[in-house]
Image 1 (cartoon, rainbow, N blue to C red):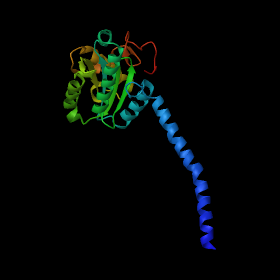
Image 2 (spheres, rainbow, N blue to C red; image 1 turned 90 degrees about the horizontal axis):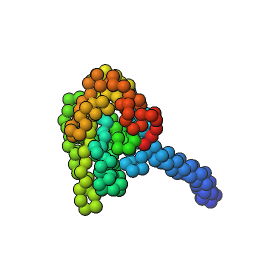
Image 3 (cartoon, helix red, strand yellow; image 1 turned 180 degrees about the horizontal axis):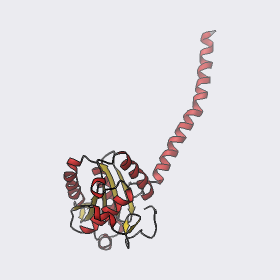
Image 4 (cartoon, rainbow, N blue to C red; image 1 turned 60 degrees about the horizontal axis):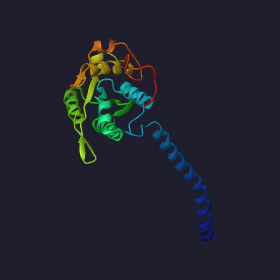
Length: 219
């Protein structure tokens, strides 16, 4: 009797499990689609709004050892004009990949718009200088493209809460942006000081830069 009932019990358990399995799969697919909607399809980095929320959370939890870096491709229009838009896309994808590699699994990388990116990562203050120097070397490497190499220059500005005197993300972005502009085309990472945070800006960018008229717009 018991042996005869076992298959029926197994069938009932299986029947109950099937809807749950289907819902789990649906939830997984939905989560993946929602995540992808917040990603820039070209570079795989977060779009502006998604980056901002994640970066502020990381900053709130670890104010003592985070570094925010803004990166801006140098002479990007000239590269597009000389090599074509596909080459420009390859350069942008390379920037996203390199920033992600540098930030590590606990960092956050975002494409703010066009050829502008931001990355925030946890780095021991004792090692920040060396890590930023490594970033500058990494970003200066040429980009393999169709059997050749594309020239790539990236301006970089870095800000920390300790140097800027603030744990507010817009203040750090403003300071990093001003520092980046100060070192434009040098290939070096310019570290922000407190006065960089006082530069007038909109949405973390100096007046006149692309995107300042559209606060919060994603890349």
